[in-house]
Image (cartoon, rainbow, N blue to C red; front, side, top):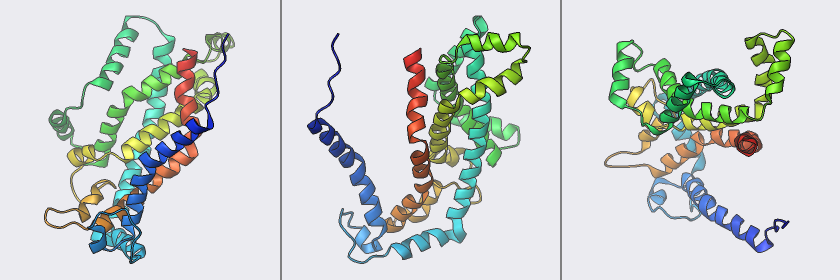
Length: 277
C-alpha cells in the first residue's frame, strides 16, 4: 500500500508565492491608493504615496453625505444578523428532517432545494410580491429576500453534515421519552457547531457584501447598505479614487475579522460531511 508523499519545500514556497500574487497585490493596491491624494490616486499605480493622506481620506469617507457610511453599516448589520439567525434555525431543522426521513415528499423537497441553487432570482416578480404585501423598500423585505436566496445552500450544508450524526442517538433519545423538538435542540443542534460556523461565515459575508439585491429591492438614501456607499465617490464625470479605495478598506474590515475567527471551523464544517458521506 503506497503512502502519500509530502509536498516538497519548493512546492510549498511556490504555492505561497502564488497566493501572495493573486491576493496580496490587489489588496496592497487598494491599501496604498487609499492613502494617496486624489491626483496621485488617479494615476492608478502600485506605488507608495508621495503624500500620506490616509487620515484625511478616511475622515472624509466617514463623514461624507451626513455619515452615510455609518447608516450603511447599521443597515447591513441588521440585515445580516437577522437573516443569518433565521437561516440557522430554519435550515438546520430542514436539513435534519430531509436527511432523517425518506419518502416522495422528502425527495420532492430535496429537488426543490437543489433547484433553488440553479434557478436565478426573478427581480421584477419579486418586487411585485413585496409591493403587494406592503414591505417593498424596507429592511424587512431585504431580510426576506436574503433568507430566500441563502436557504438552498444552507440546507445543503446542514443535510450533508447530518450524515455524521449516527441514527442510534435518535433511537436512544426517543426510547428515553425525549420529544422531537426537545431532542433536536438539546442533542442534535449542539452537535452542529462546525457546520453552523460555516453557515454563519459564508452567508454573513455574502449578505454583507451583496451589491445587486439592495440596489433592486432596497432603494433610497435612508436604506443604503455598505456596498451602495461606494456610489458617493464614483461618478459619471469625476471620481475620487482615493476616497473610493478608503471606503473599500473600511467596509472590508468586518468580513476580514469574521474570517480570522472562523477560518478553521469553515474547513471542518464543509469537509466532514463529504468525507463521512
